[in-house]
Length: 266
Image (tube, rainbow, N blue to C red; front, side, top):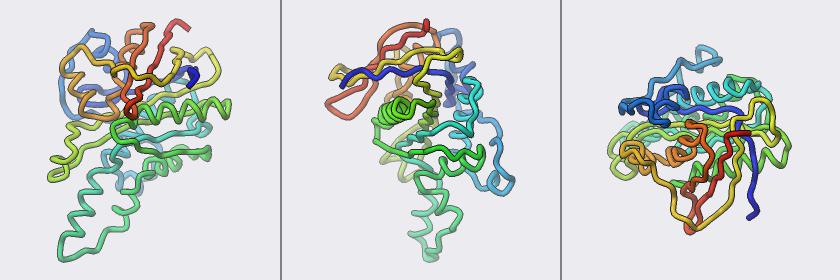
């Protein structure tokens, strides 16, 4: 395909030892050590109290990355189309529902059921922001970040409007963890803009290649990249953290990967 070009206006990253973009930027730039621990998430913003009480890790994570990216871009979340990309969605709710179905009392909680659907974060985001712009929720297993980035970029270019990409993953309890051993929750968000503005931090050029995926030089960051689908984004996030120009390759659908040329001096 021809290269797709898009600008990055806003960035966020929350994960193990990565509590927001400022701390993440220091770790990815090599100015601070990564201390693996569950992510420290801010309180859920803008939800009514009843909804706030119901939400779990996945909603909290998606809200944290979404609002931080929007703030850093100086954008209005009510006017941003969104792409929500997650390989598993709400693992805790899925576990609880399966546990209930395997018990003598098979009555599933309606609240748990509506929170278990793949587009639940999109629904909560629209409640929190009063956003009525188009929203897409998708999954592509380990290629989920690249699929989300391609979808958000394509939508932004076609609509000539900014789009918010949110890519995030959570962890399953046992016994599902043995089948899908994602070790930590992690999420990234990017505000993508087809037009260069004063908020632009970098320009991305996306193309499909058959080259091998880029690896992280730090062993612990590479462990995260290999084991959390949303963390396939880390080579890209590292270039953005350093403010460096360069090209990285992100896992996509075999035999193709996604090449991302980054120009930070825009």
